Image (cartoon, rainbow, N blue to C red):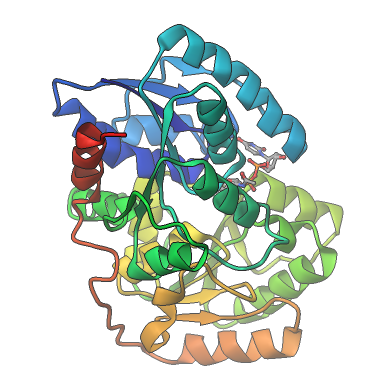
Length: 358
Ligand code: UD1
């Protein structure tokens, strides 16, 4: 059996790593890793391959940054040629990026089977390109691998019932696999003490390209930085817009985007996380860290249980400042459940794909 393992953006490298490890153990499956090139900076791409031991992609489509329709169509055109040449049985796509949707369309139109990992996730905010990518990818996929019970229920509501499997979350597989294996030197490098700083990330288009939202976030966080250090591994686009809108951010400690190892080390030792990333919300939950989500909604409602994660909508400065200041003053004892499986999702996924009969 031949499988294309399609990746393109930072979170997909993390999700593909446990799947790739599982395929490696299986002599009957040949893996072809295809990188769309949606993320291309060393910090957003190559470093993850090295650190997570993901084999070098056989193909890199080098698509680069474009407006969404152009990016999606360029990936489809290039991927269809590879599918024609390689004749795989399956394509595995992850999550909700433009690469995911392009992979699902290319797979569907080329007549190969599509497995969607992280299926059934919904924010119910159609202004997010990711929401559209997820919904359409779920419609096109032959097998839908859900990370949580809520995700399977979301699919039921949309009348998608066939070939839906609750397998747990592959990001938890990776977290569990690596959490004890590495500890980077990043705390020393940044002169940080345990539980004495906030880890901040912002990259969503609604939070970076809309001046009011970006300036609200940076204003509130910059204020908070007077009482606690704020470490901000900054996405290239976010930095571009902070400069473009000339937003004051002098108290925040900016660093380049971090490798998985460094980010997880910072996460393990921070006081709390403030983010708009779906992946980091989950990783905070896995690490039993308080998370403040800088958005109006989350596609991971499971993390809101017991207030492990608190929504902090960036459209109201006063409300944001209140939430951030309250969280920074308290010591939270975070309770979590085994909401995201046992860390063996990749194993289940590969087993189901191998036995799948149409
Ligand atoms: C993409 C995904 C998002 C995911 C995120 C993880 C979509 C619609 N969005 O968002 O779901 O959470 O990846 O990080 O697919 N850029 C660089 N270097 C790079 C890549 C991007 O400078 O290597 C800059 C470019 O200016 C680009 C912008 O970042 O236009 C946005 O990149 P893009 O891949 O479109 O979206 P992300 O915000 O990274």
